[in-house]
Amino acid sequence: MEKWLKISLLLCLFGFIKELRPSEPFTYEFLIGPWKDLTEDEIVKQAFPISTYSNLICLVIIFLVTDMCRYKPLIILLGLSGIVVWSMLLWTSSLLELIVIEAMYGLFRATEVAYYSYIYAKVDKEHYQKVTSHTRGAILAGRSISGVASQVLVSTKVLDYEQLNYISLAGVATATIWAIFLPPVSKSLYFHSEDSKNQPLSKKAKSAFKLMKSHFINAYTNIYVLKWSIWWALSTCGYVQVEFYLQPLYSAIQDDDTNIYNGAVEAIITLLGFLAALLAGYLKFNWEIKGELTLGLFSLIQGALIVAVSQTEYLFLCYAFYIVFGILYHFMITIASAEIAKRIDEDSYGLIFGINMFVSLVFNSILTAVVATEGIGFALDPRGQYVVYGGYHLAISMVFMGMGIRTCAVKRKTKIVASGDGEKRSISAS
Image (cartoon, rainbow, N blue to C red; front, side, top):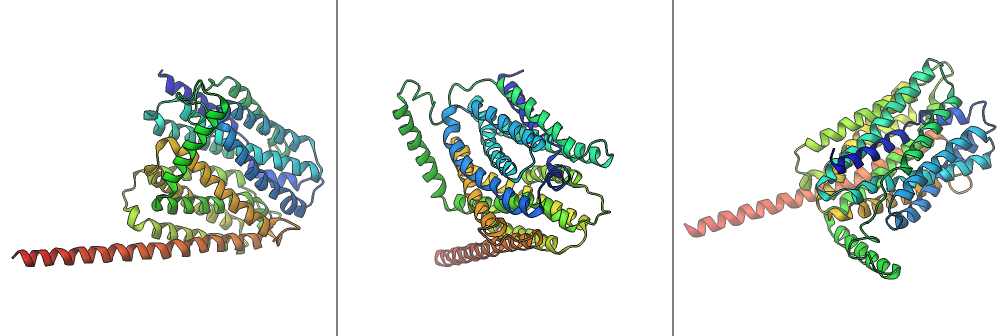
């Protein structure tokens, strides 16, 4: 087996195992159940928002030190923070402790950047496309299997919501042990490059930030990259917000005698999202001319779906609309990522997508503060929140459809002018 493939498989196994968290589709049901002494408002309006703020703060720190620490320590930290989260979920019960859990969960999510970027420091550039598909495929496979397992275990009453957390804890603990044995990284792009091997830390830092600045300017002075990056960040923000607060909405919609299929829904959306992403890779389309219009159209459909979700009284209709919403997101985010990647230096992938994610989290924090946080914003109920999230996507659609119409009009005008000039030259020549 080739060395690059072996390293890729080792990392993929870590990613797969860490996603075996069957308790996640039922976290809210667990928290409002008999195992905790918490109210719905305390969970949704006081505790849950902390995760978003923590993720933003931790991402800034993690983003700066991941390259400096050469990835592996941060991957281990990812596992350790997961152990803390699911241990506390099992053995604590107060609101203050839940707030600590949400802060640690923000760290858990932020350190995932090390998982996605580690592989680029361990393999040659010629294998980037393959290892990217491997690492993301491992995540999707783990989530899908986890969703199926959680649904089967709950529906058959083999385990209750609390007991699912033991499997999640075992998953992140096993992944942490596995991470310890990942091959160390001897060099990295910014702080530990071949050119700076024997330089003092101050000079390494100066060179690293100079290279980061160069990559940043080269990417974001390209208007095409900037437009797609803005949509990437805004759409990811909307998707994360919808996904994160969906379980409280399920609870508000469902009747006491309604069966819950949260795990099955997550498995379906993961599998169909993966297939949509594959389809996006083979689709032939003129994204330069019609891309903005398409982004606007997809955001319009997503916004309409979320507004409908906020008003429905039927849980299964909510499930169906969320699945379609997720498929549209996975399809277009794949296109957006590819369009951005085509026009930036391949060495800057981690930096540019990390910045895009940071911008997305800034918008997440603003939305969370205004919409969901008690004592800061409006602290809306679940249905009210989803009216806002639907309106958010509709606003994105209006902006990009306007840009798309303008781009198509300019291209058409340019084509007509070029055609007219061609006719004039032909007449002159005759």
